[in-house]
Length: 292
Ligand code: ADP
Ligand code: MG
Image 1 (cartoon, rainbow, N blue to C red):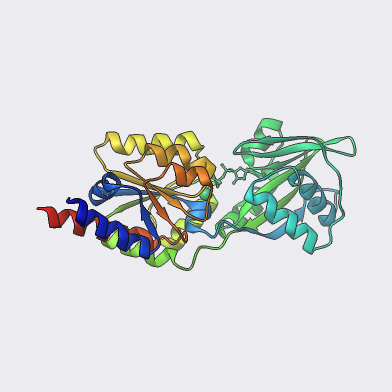
Image 2: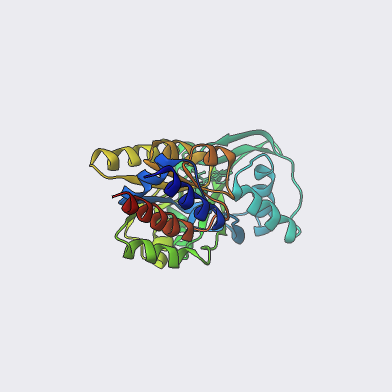
């Protein structure tokens, strides 16, 4: 493409809130045929809110929420914020947790009143040898509603379930439909559980879902698709998406997300609106057509 046509395209993109780093990103975009999408903060608002807290066993619901909040005070995860503000709104008691430890991709651990306490996903509970069979049905039901269910263990025993929900962005469904109509293959990749991921995918009519994946798995997925001969774009917002954004032919960052995501990306959607991908693709293809 001529420098002039690229300048025009990137200028139009910028006006529409789509920042395209350079000519190379624009050229690569025109060839993309597979789009990998992170869920939390990319398809969804990324601001989950507390919806359920359930006691299992002796502890009261109030205690379950207070213990969960005590642990999350040490965490910077979006899930932590949801639990902390939910606990505050509901007037839960303020408990102090010691020996705090964040387990990446699994949850948080600590000690309250001399007892070990943990909150997180099934993998974390498996690490601790906590039996989940009594709540499998309840957890599945929460996940089918698109909620993220976290399990609370106290002293090595299951004590409760805490769930949050993150709304799908208003603009997401339309953008996905347009991208599918344009012939792009769409794959969702998320660290969240299979049940929750599938519930969101069902609403958005996304057929391909990779759930319970680590940041490295997301990057490996991008690598696999490239090895199959695809030109791959990856869109994400988080620190944990940076490796996959860097691995993709075109990394697309939500401007509303983490700085490292933006730094790893060739394209930035300033307002975090996925319709920007549709627009960037039009611009890229129109620019490339003009050169021939
Ligand atoms: P995502 O890719 O959706 O941002 P992560 O890889 O950060 O997810 O986390 C995967 C899962 O681990 C979460 O869905 C949650 O169940 C659990 N988890 C991670 N951090 C926390 C936390 N601070 N509190 C509770 N659960 C957590
Ligand atoms: Mg995310």
